[in-house]
Length: 572
Image 1 (spheres, rainbow, N blue to C red):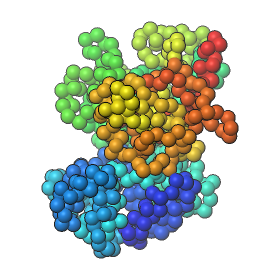
Image 2: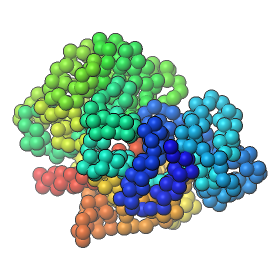
Image 3: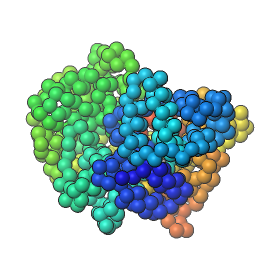
Image 4: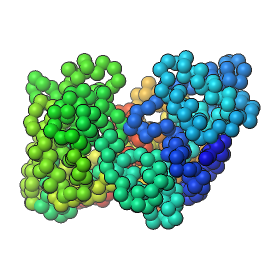
C-alpha cells in the first residue's frame, strides 16, 4: 500500500524533470510500489483526475473556494492567502507555504476516497468543509498536489503515452507497449488497463474486450490531395459525404444510452433526441459512430457548424433541441450484442449497420457510394461541395476499424482554396509573447503554438500566431493562459523559440494559413540540421477549441502530409 506522502514525493520528482524517458522510469517505480487494489487510483491521480474524463465527474471547486478552505485549515486570514496567491500564481505553492505540518500518514486510497466525497458532495458548503478536514490531515507537500488536482491543474507534464510506456515496463519489456496501447484504445481508461495488468498480467491484456459504456478511441483519417490519389491509395473503395458537425460515438447497453464526443466527453444529456432514437434500435448492446448536424426542419438544410456547436450546452437543452434539432448520420458499427465488429472489414460493418438503421427524423445512414475510378470520386466530391458539405471520406473496403490510429484505411478529400492551405490546422498553445505597440496594454500580442508528435509524446512548435482574435478575445485568452503559466518550458514541449511566458500545453486553437514552409526556427518535422516546418501567415479561426484535448491537435506527420499535398496542388 502506497502512502499519499510517497505519491506526492513521486509527483515532486516528475515535476522536477524535463526528460520524458526519466518520467517513464519514475512512473514505473511508482506503479511498481502500488498494489493491485490501488494501482488504478494511483494512475487516475497521476493524470489529475478521479475517474476517466468520459465519466464527467468534476470537483466543482474554484480556486477562490480552495483559498477559503486553506485559510480555515491553517488559521491565516483569507486576505493573506489571497496576497500569497497573487505573488505565487499557484494554489499548490500557496498550500505548500502555509500548511506547516507533517500530516497523518494517510494512504493513497484514503485520500482518494476523501477527494471522491468532495467531488460527489452536492452543496458548496459541504465541499469546502470536507476539503478543510482533508487539508488538516495532510502535510504541506501532500496538500500542494491535492489542491492542484481539485482545481484541475496538476502540472506534472505527464501524458497518456508516458503512462502507457511505464505500464509496459511493469511487464518487463517496452515491446509490450502495443498491448497496453491496444487495451487503452478499446476502453479509454488507463486506470482499468493498469488494474487489469496488475491482476491478470499479459493474459489479461491479450483478452481485453470492448465494453459498452467505455468509449473506444476513435479512428482517424489521413489527407489526400486529389481524387486520383484517393483511388491510388485505396483502389475500389467506399466514398462518403463528409459532414461538418459533431462526431459522436453512441453506446447502448440494455435501456442505458451513453453518447461521447470526438474527444470522448460525455454528451448524453445534451442530445436527448439522439438518445431517444437510439433506444428504438433493435439491439441489446450496440456501439455505433455518426456525425450529428443541426437541421432546419422547414427547409431540410443543415445549419453551419457555428449553430450546431450551440447544442453542446448544459442548460436550456430542451428548448435548443426544439429550435435546432439534430440529425445523426450513422457511418460505422463497432460492436453488436457481444460481438466485436472493429476487427471486421468496413464493407461488412456497413452492411450490418444498414440492417440496423431505419430511416427516421433523427437517424439516417451516411451517404455512401462504391467507386473504382477517379472520375467517380470527382463527381461525388463535386456534388458534395455544391451542396455545401466539407468534402468526402474514402474508406478501404476490407479495412478493420483501427481504434486510436490515423492511417490510410480512411482518407479525406476536402475543398481547397486558391492562395491558402486546403485545410485549417489545430495547434496547441505552449507560450505567449507580450503585446507591443497597440497591444502593449493588453500584455499579450502573439502565441507560440505547436503540433503533436505521438511518437515522442511531445509538442513541436509550428507557428507564432498574432492575428485573428478581437481585443476582447486577447484579454480573455491572457487570463486563461496566466492560470496555467509555468516557470520553465513544459517537459513535453520541444522548442527552439523562447516566449515571454511558457504555459502548460492545454488549449487548442484552429488556424488558417497561406502555406506551409520550411523553417530553421521551428521543431515540427525537424531532423538533425535540416529545417522544420512552419505555417506562413497563420491567423486564428474562432476562439479556443474547448472540445479538443492537446493530443487532438494536428500531428507532425499531418503537417508533413499537408506540405506534400500543397506542393502537388501548386504543380497542378
